[in-house]
Length: 166
Image 1 (cartoon, rainbow, N blue to C red):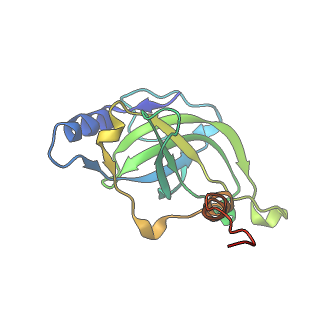
Image 2 (cartoon, rainbow, N blue to C red):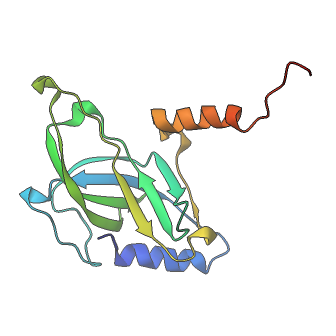
């Protein structure tokens, strides 16, 4: 279960009452929980055993629930070998904003003859999220092949086709 930390809640509360409703949640980090599924609280400030951190590559609101904000990162294949059991979002000052256990996932080392990149995603529930602007560094944004394909196809599917008579 995702937990908004005290620091995360403070930041969201402050932003909602300000004239500049934007936050810079910059990093997504994963760890192995020191070998077990970790237990977090709103007082948590670090992962149990952080193994990889990168800038957030995508932030979006869920299509079916506007209170769910989805944060995505990227772990390249050459970052392995590691188990991932925990995930967190940090702001630009490295304060933990939200944290959660993560379904146990193994990323092998490239030397094992297998390559696996991981796009960890964390969904954070924030009331009034439509009133908050999440800032992302556009130089770190990545597009999955599925997203690119959907964007490309939507340009052609939504346009009427010309007939031979026109």
